[in-house]
Length: 160
Ligand code: SME
Image (spheres, rainbow, N blue to C red):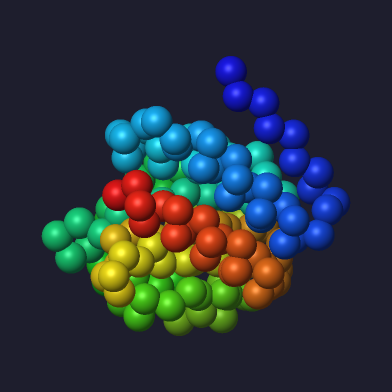
């Protein structure tokens, strides 16, 4: 059994540092990428408040394919360049979207989503996957959330 008890009221930098430390502990000794991504999606869900979806899409044969996640069932395949996830994968850059309704081509997997953070997982400059976080709160994510999930993405890059 794993027991993590994050304090959601601590500063975001501290929360994400704790999240990455917990992630390292969770994946150490396990090589199966699906098992590790499944546990990491559960860890994000436990640590990061005000989410309605959190998980992974992996880049396979030129398109994003749904990976382990928490939340409602979601779109399975996303072409490069489409939606927020496709934009992150095509550009290799983090997408911080305060209002998903204002993002051209946003793909609504859960109608409750109002804001979104998508971080690419890069190894040697190549996109392997994206980490997608959705919130029912408008403008839920800021640069501290982006930096925190980017540090998790660096860890994820070593798992794929
Ligand atoms: N909203 C995303 C699609 C994935 S779901 O949110 C889980 C997008 O526009 O790419």
